Each structure stands twice: as C-alpha cells, then as structure tokens.
Length: 449
Image 1 (tube, rainbow, N blue to C red):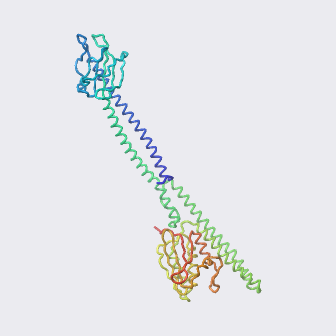
Image 2: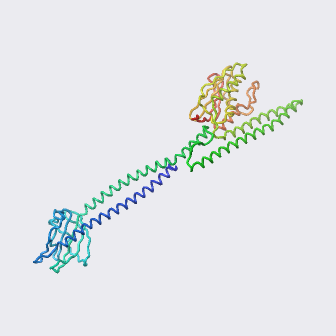
Image 3: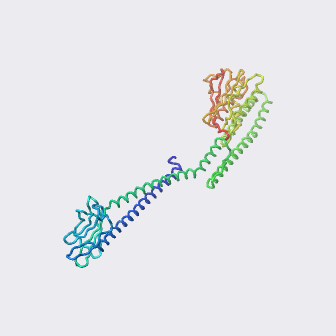
C-alpha cells in the first residue's frame, strides 16, 4: 500500500478518525465511571455519617456514647480503612476501634448549620483518606460536637485503575478490529478498479480489443467511455489507412504515365526521367508503408501469432527460391504473440527472411523465442556474411551492396523503421552457419487466456 494510493488515503483517514473517536470515547467513559464511583463512595460515607449522628447521645454526666455500634464491621477492625470520630471543644472524645491509637484530623473547623465539609488527609498506616464532617447538637447537652466519617481511597483508585486498564484494552482491540474491517472494506471496495486495470492490460498487451467484464455502476461509465475511445481510435486508424491507400493510387497512376512516356522517349532525358520516376515510386512505397505502420502502431489490442506468420512466409519464400534449393527451417515460436498488426510483422520478418534467401547458399534458419515481454526473432543464413564495418550502411534507404542481387535497397530500412515504431530494434551479427544473422527484438503480447 503506497503513500499516494487511494487505499492508503482511505485507510489512513479511517484510522485517524477511529483513533480520535476511540480516544475521546475512552476519556469520556473513564470520566463517567470515575464520577459514578466517587459519588457512590461519597454516598456510603454520607450514609455512615447520618447513622453516626442518629446513634450518638449524651448520657448523664455529659459522656457521649453510641446507642449501639455501627453495623459495618470495618469500623471494628484496626486500620481497616473506614473510620469515624466525634470531636468536642477539648478534642476527640469518641472514635472507632478501627482508628486504634490514631485520630482523624482533630482540628475543630467551625461549620454553619447543616453544612458538610469534605476533606482529604493522611490516615493511619500511611493511608490517604477522604471524609465528611459536620457539626451537630446532641440532645440534653446544649453543646455542639463535630462528627466525622472517613475512608481509605485506595479501593476507589484501584477500581478506577482496573476499569481504565480494561477500557483501554477493550478500545484497543475494538480499534484494531475496526482498522482490519476498514482495510478489508477498502480492498473489497477498490477491487473493481483492479479489474479495470487488468482489463486495460489485456487491451494494451493485445489479449482483448475492448474492455470486458462486469463493473459496478460507479465504474461502468468509465469503462464505457474507454471502450468508446478505443472504438474511435480504431476508426481514426482505419480512415488513415483508407486515405493512405487513396493517396497511393492517386500518385502511382501519374508516375506510371510518366514512366511509360519516358520509356518511349529516347536519349538522355528519357533515361533520366525513367530513373527518377523509379526512385520516386520506391520512395512513395516506403513512406506510404511507414505512414500505414505508424497508424497501425497506435491501435491497442492488436496481436499476431508469430509462428503462423513465420511458417506462411517460409512456405512462400521456399516456392520463390525453389530453383536454388534453399532450405528454410523454422524453430520454436509456439504460443508466441506479437503485439502489433499481422501485416507489419510480415513486412519486417518477410524482408529479413527474403534478404537471407537472396544471399544464402542453401540454408536459412529462423529461430523464434520470447521472454520478459519481448520477442527475439533470429534469421541465420550460410551466405558470404557481411563485414562489421559495413553493416550499419545496409540500413540506409536505397543503399545496395550488390547491384546483381534483385531488390531496391529499402527492405532493411523499412524493417528498422517499423521495428522502432513498435519500440523494437533490428541488428546484424555473425551467424553460426557462417553467414549473416539478423536479430529482431519486438514487443510480445500476452497469450490468450
């Protein structure tokens, strides 16, 4: 998943919002729980404070006692964390057994009638305790006493800590599950785009001529527009071919008339016109062929069976050079596809094979192979070969090494031009048969599924 991909953007955006939402929810739930337990804790203390006030009385002699003990046994267990104390003007006068030899904060703080004071202080055994205290007037005494109930907050803090830990773990698991769900959703939701990409690859590599498949309603208009573009492109190419053919016919007829007229005329002028008309005809054929191939090279979805074209060419050339007994062998090529038009492959491979047959003594071998999306078509002959220093010159238009051999000198030039139009190349090497080797490197199309 790359940083500039739609998948990353969707997943990162979802992860960010999930994280923010879970953090806010975590703090909110933790605050609500803390507030709840603190209120419950305070209600328990307040309940014990009310009971203590109800059970306190002044006996004869001014002694303050409880009518009976508080029900909660924690007030009887030393340092249990729950404590009560009654304080007079002279200091603490009654306290719970749980305080043992300790006293609560005995500073007498005057309070208004009905006022309840909350406080936090250090208790017995280094405990941190929170408590409530208020002033009461006991019947029969006329004096004001301050009663106080306090409890250790460690249990409260432990409960809050346990809840926060459980909450954090639960939210983390929830967040991970939501993130996995988002990734699955993103991958599933963007699958049609991967199908569209695969369909485009099929078109580009020649496996199919149009986009095919079932796409969601959001992607169907895009696929339809791409198919319309492909159809339009094919129509433009077809019109270009038609114009090229019309131009060829329009120009060849006047050239033929000129050549025929020059043939009937004698002298140097007639010979000059005849030669120049022949040169113009060759150049016209070359550039018209190049224009046609440029148009063909722009067509997406074109694919050609290499073996079928090669075998057909071999049979044709074998009949043409039957009187010389040229043996043309074709090796390999099964399943290989050229990403281009059939006539263009025939133009390139036919020129190379024809050139080999012209110079061969008796054997021409064509080897077809492919790997890594490329085709390598090798044509060997057992002819005289060609010196390395003159090999580059044979690709020049109209250049001929031997006027006794039939041809117009445009074959290899056309092969080079067409190969380059398809992103390929042609080169000449020494052949293992003793003559020349021509190597065509061309783009391969994927095999049909």
